[in-house]
Length: 372
Image 1 (cartoon, rainbow, N blue to C red):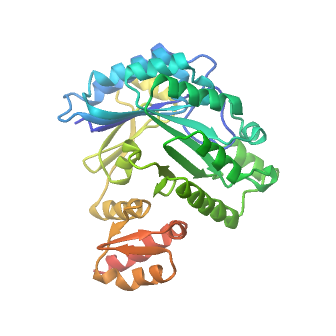
Image 2 (cartoon, rainbow, N blue to C red):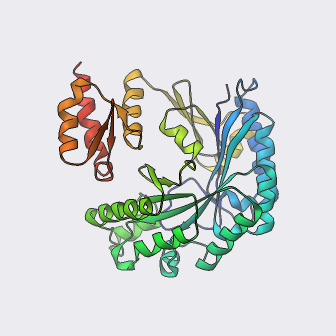
């Protein structure tokens, strides 16, 4: 049955960023008609019955969904609306690069039902944007924000990346301040990781780039927490901050094991304890669908133990924490004594210092609980 949260992976990008290991298809011209046709085929092949309940969120990620333009986003949402009835107030998010966002385009997105734009800013430093191989400049960030405001789209999120190589001389607090000055209601801050196969990985292997040390990563993570919470944001998940009432509905579904459908190349989905994922490569995804075959590349049925482990890990990543019991007392007390966790009734919640050590608490609690 179609889930209440729907993710669509739009793989198209103008170029590959230096750190990117996502499933993307670099295209000068986006094959919109082909993509819409294959998306419709995927839905019809996978979902033979209408959904029992209306959708709470649609999320178009990528890749660069904003490269679909005004009409492309309208057609994707129209395709989803054929199968999922949106519940009143449903969240509809699109990820966008600043250079794609104009008032005309944003107004069309608003008319199609977009309620939230996640803007891939990453940095306000021209030198850093150039190093990242981003396609936008600083002025386009401000134009994009103004376009979203003029269109009347109610939610705006800004993405930033921290823990960059120290040789870049990036001023992290300056970027945080620039983001806050734009008055978004949501900020996502992700630590840079070097993934195999990326341009950054090859640069590091050649000795041309050095990763930020762990101490710098931790310091910038904690600085973001202090700066953004002082500006009125709630640090509600390790990488995410929101003004009161502006938490991302779709992303929050992932952290609570809610069911979600996944469409498009490389998309994952989770329904009734079954996790499935699509063919990663766009050319393969479209070819399989052209042959009338559901493009599922693999699946796994999660055991009770796996579900419990994921629930523990995901829960500890959020400000809500997880339920603890008397048997956990000794472990939890050690974490609270160190200032890494706090107890709130029957829940244990990690502090920002604790979030830097999440895996250690997951391992300790899992090992203890496995004995009983």
